[in-house]
Length: 362
Ligand code: DOR
Ligand code: ZN
Image 1 (cartoon, rainbow, N blue to C red):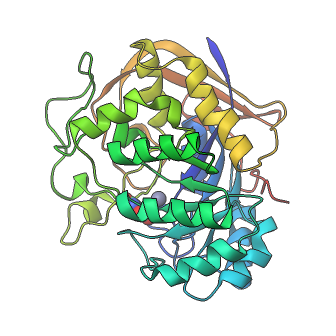
Image 2 (tube, helix red, strand yellow):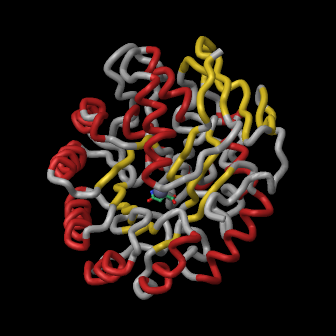
C-alpha cells in the first residue's frame, strides 16, 4: 500500500450552474474523491458564467451545499468586469482568461480587453490563461509588462513549453500545467507513449476526439515529456459532456479526467517515465504554492500500486458516462481517501455527504 497526500486539481469544469445533466457539484466532487483528488479549483465557464459578485455568491452557495471535497471557484474575465473581479479576488481561486477557441461565452479576442485585467488583477493569485501558441506569447508579454504572475493552462505544444522555459529563465513569473490527454494521446487519437502500449488498438474518432487545445502531434507530445521539468502542475481540465453530445451533430470539446489522471500517471511511474516525487510535486506541492492553498490536515490517499486493471467509464462517478481512456490497461488504484480526518472514499464508494467539502478561500 502506497500512502500519498491528497491531490490538488487546479482545472475542473463542474458545470453547475447551467448544465447539470453533464455534471454538478455533487457528481464532480465524487469523481474527484474517487480519483484521489481532495481539492478542486472550479472553472467559471458555467451558465451563467461566474464573473461578478452575484454569480460568484450564487455559485459558492451551491458549492457549499453540494461539494464533497474541498474547492475554490475561479472568476472569469469578461469584456468589462476587470475592476469588479479585481475586488472579488480574495474570494476566488484565481482569474481565468479565455483567449482562444473554447466552450462557453467567455472568450476575449480583443487584446485591449486583456490589458485592463492584467493592469487591475491584484496578483496574489495568478492570472490563468487559456492561451495557445502566439496568443500564449502575447499573454506572457502582458504578464511581463505588468509584472503579474501568470499560469498557462493545459499547454500542449512543443513551442509553448520551450517558450515558457525561456521565459522562466529570464525571470517572467510564469507557471504552467499539462493535462494527461496531451501527454498520452496524439492528434490521431492514439496512445502516444514511447514504451509498451497500454491502450486498446482502436483510436478515438469523431466528436470524442474533440478537445481544446486540440490533441497535438507526436513531436509535441514528446517535447512535453522531454521538458517535464518546465511543467509545474498536472491538471485534468475535467470537461464533461455526455456521450450523446460527443457523438451528436455539434460535438462540444472536452474530456472528463478526474478519475483517470492518477492511474495514468502511476502507470507512467511504473514505466519509469516519471518519478513519484515528480508527481507529488506537480499535483500537491506546486499547485498549493502557486494558488496559495492551505494544508489539508489529516488528509491522505491509500493506493494499491500493484493493482492492474482496465479503465471503465461504467465504474466512474462522473455523470458524463464516458472516458477517452476506455479500455486502457493501467497499474495503480486508489483504494481509500481520508479527507480532514473523515473516510471520504473506500473501494468504489463515496462516504461523505454533499456539503462536506469546504471552500478553501473562507
Ligand atoms: O476542451 C475544452 N473543454 N476546452 C475548453 O477550453 C473548455 C472545456 C469545456 O468547458 O468543455
Ligand atoms: Zn478547461
